[in-house]
Image (tube, rainbow, N blue to C red; front, side, top):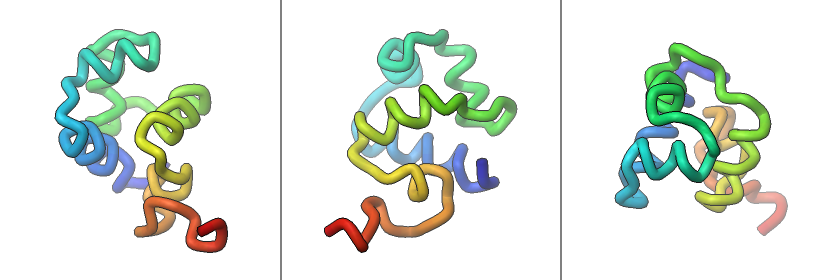
Length: 76
């Protein structure tokens, strides 16, 4: 997880007008645990990474801060 991942998580959630509680429900976790992901206090588990990539329609590389492209440009 990159140091940008918490910021990306928060920005994606806010861009979709969602609360931490709503995203936590999608992930099947608590709001407290999701807030820890957004603060960078806990690493995002793979199952949650995959769920969020699908929900937000972004690549894992984007969500992990490895690329500025929301989608893999090679797949477009």
